Image 1 (cartoon, helix red, strand yellow):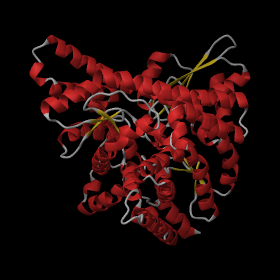
Image 2 (tube, one colour; image 1 turned 90 degrees about the vertical axis):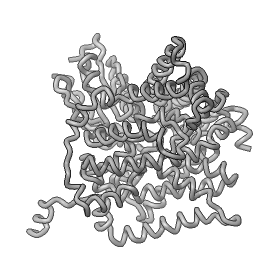
Image 3 (cartoon, rainbow over the protein chains, first blue to last red; image 1 turned 45 degrees about the vertical axis):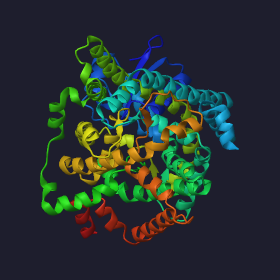
Image 4 (cartoon, each protein chain N blue to C red; image 1 turned 30 degrees about the vertical axis):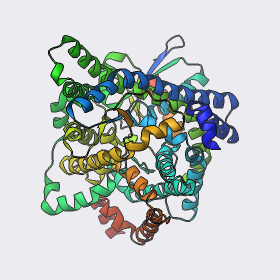
Length: 101
Length: 468
C-alpha cells in the first residue's frame, strides 16, 4: 500500500507502448497529482507486460489492450474508461480499492 | 500562402501553433495548452533527431550499397508511421482535418447515417495523410479535402458494420473502430472468409498460444529489425566479407536498426502527450450526448492488438513479410520502422471477422500486407520530396530514400483521389457513389451486413427471442 513517502509505481501498457498508454499515463499522473500522491508511470508494450512486471516492482498495471496478461502477483486493470471517459469514476474507485489492499 | 508559411516555420513549429489555437478556442486552460503544444514540438524534433543519424549513418549507406552493388532494388526505407502522421498534420489539410472531421462525423450522426462517434482525434491523421497525398499529387485542395472526407465516411460505415463482431470478439461493448490501418484488411477478409468457409479451411483450429511459444525470440520486433538489417548488410557488402571492418559495420547496422525500432515509439509518446488535452476536451464535450443516443465511440485499433489471436496472426505475418520484401517482384520498399506495427494493425479487424481462426486470419492479413508493399512502393516515389517541401529536413543518402508505409485503405483512397480523366475527378465521383450505395444497402439490411462481417448470433439469444 502506498504511504505518503512512497512513490506509487504503475505500468501502463498498450499495443505499441506509445499511443494509448500515453493517454493513460497522462490521466493517471493528473489524478494522483491532484491528490498529492507521488506516482511514477512507466509505459510499455502489452507483449512485454509480463516480463516488465517480473523485473519492475510495480504496484499496479493498467492496460488498454486486454487485461488477461497472465500476470498474477500485481493487479491488472482495464484502462479503456480513461480513453472514452465512460466509467472513469468507477475506474478510479477500482484503483483506490486495489491499492488499499 | 499556407505552403509559404509552413516552409518558413517548418512542421515542428507550425503544428504546435495550430494545436495551441484549437485548444484555446475550446477553452483548454492556457498553461496546459502551452505545455501540450510544446510537447508536440518535442515529439516532432525527437523524431527527426533519431531518424536522421540512423538514416544518414547506418541504413542509408547500406541500402545505397545494396542497390549499386547487387542490383537488389529496394530504395525506399520505411522509418515508421510517426513520420506519416507528422506529414499529415503539417499540410493545410492536416490543419483543417480536426474541425472538418468532427463536423462530418456529427452531420452523419445527425442524419442517422452512422452510429459511430469517433473520439480518437489523433487518428484523424490517416484521413489527412490520404488527403494531403491527393492534394500534392493533383495540386487541387478540393480533391484533397474530398478524399479525406471520403475515407472518413467510408471508415465510419465500416466501423458500424464491424462493430457487433469486434465488440463481441474483443469483449469491448460500446466501441467501434473506424481506424484506417485497423480496417485495412477488412475488405480482403470478406472474400477470403467466404472462400475458406466453402472449402472447409475455416474449420481447422490452431492454438495461438502454442504458436507463440514456439516463435520465442522471433516474436520481438527489435529482433526482426536486427535480422532484416543484417540481411541488407550481407547483400550490400557480400564481396567484402573477408574484411573485419565490414563485419563491424554489419553488426552496427543491425543494432542500430533494433535501437531505432525501440526508440521511435518514445518520440510518438511525446506527440501523443501533446495531443492529449485536445482529445480529452473534445471527448468531454461530445461523449455525454453520444452515450445518450447509444452511439458507439470510435477508438484506436491498438485496443484490439493485445488479443492473443491478433498477436499470433500479427507475429506470423511479420515473419512472412521479411522474405516477401526481398522476393516479391516489383516491390521497392523495405518495411523497417513499422515491421512490428503494420502486420498487427492489419490483423486486428481481420482476426475478429474470422472469429479467431489463425489460418484464415493469416491468409487475409498476408494478402493485405502484400497490397501494403505495392501501395508503399508507389506512394514512396514522391514521398521524400513531399516531406522536404513542407519543411521536414531529410539527409541526402544516395540511392536510399525515406519511404511511406501505405496500408491498403490509404493506398486505395490515394489512388482513387488522384484519378482524373480529362480534368474530371472520376475517382472521387466513383468513391462517393460507392459510399452512398454502401449507406443505402447497409441501412436496408443491417443484420445481413453484420453476418457478412463475421457476426454470429448467440444461441441463447435466439432461445430468449423464441420464449418472449
